[in-house]
Image 1: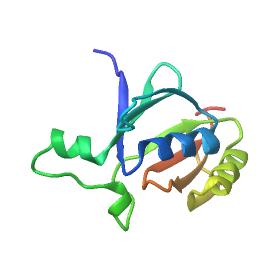
Image 2: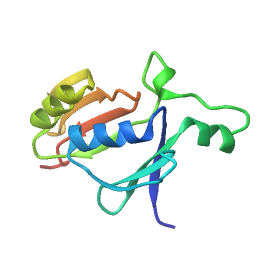
Image 3: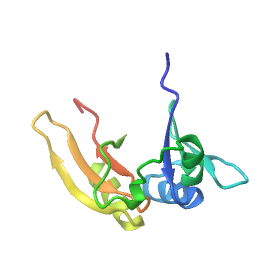
Image 4: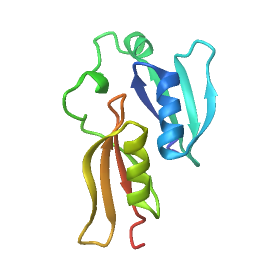
Length: 130
């Protein structure tokens, strides 16, 4: 078994790709001509976005859209960086909402949380033990 990718269902795939490129510096890997599915190059594991209409076809009983939830969903994307404060400021400048400013945790890691315009919860953190 290998963890291959994470798919985040969003209102506008192209807009989410653009935000993640601007806010976090990722590179666009792929955007389907339908604009309903796209991927970012993020390392070994792919981060992908799919339109809510695809979620509706995959989950006929419905799904919870992060963009429609007043509170963040109970899952997050974690991005590791040596400059949490800089990455946090860049994400806010790109349009993310601050949920928690960078703080040093007792185990030595610096962590912050932002919420992206599409509702995605992102943790920005320094390497553990770094």
